[in-house]
View: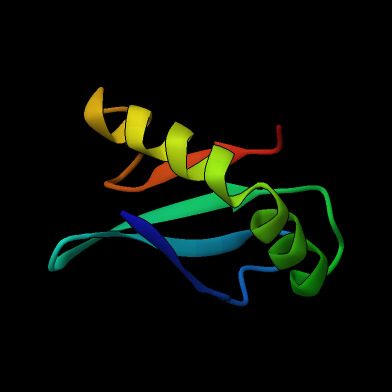
Length: 74
């Protein structure tokens, strides 16, 4: 499983990315208190392994909001 980031203009420091699950993808959203997408993306890259682990756990336990894995800052 790997993270394929896609920056979406959600406003603020929210970044949407996708976990690759074989041929499928799971949408994930990371809410940060950064002011720019660039800062949020850098933070996601820095802690990528940990966010991937947390997202997998939440997905496996069915912790989804409207079909999306929602994450927040560590």
